[in-house]
Length: 251
Ligand code: 13P
Image (cartoon, rainbow, N blue to C red; front, side):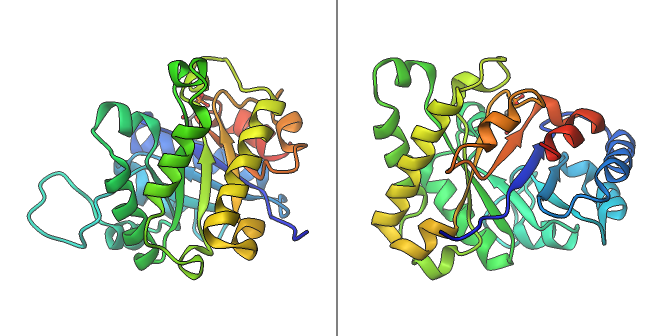
């Protein structure tokens, strides 16, 4: 089986001014300077991208954005494009986070367009999927994930998707302190990998990094990472402090 390099990603959501973000990024770089066997990424708010980019350039920590609009440019007040993210220093972009699906009308169709635009701009898409509490309760988890993946990755070939990262974030585990158990995470990650294998065949399924997200902390990361199909984490709350995020990166 091929080795997948772990990716630990921090989603800072709507936290931190640009000065605060740059300060946290600086502190983080000091704490993880010697980490080589793990890819690391932080995604601050748009307004902090430029400042954080200055801090992390030429370092082992990559910069990501949390969202964008799929058109390259145009009369789209309030939006930011993928080429603009690249010019601000981004290598990654989070797409289809459940908070965007829940509060900002993100649909699978929009997610599909964004994945295409991100890849065209040379960004690594971190494509988020996950079921809600009621969907899990009513045993619709696999049905919901299948639909999100099929629609989100509609009309791509496996060659298009070599850089793709999927993040499994059960909505009931986000910001709740209720982490999926490592067994629950492994079960879903294995399901997602098989789904990708059926849709795109083996090499992509084997090399695809699937991150777990939802109340990841320094005290549960090791157990999650011990699972064969968990290739990293997308961390919210615990990524906001350099010390706790560095501990997670050093799982
Ligand atoms: P928490 O780690 O705060 O639960 O957030 C997870 C998340 O939504 C990361 O994208």
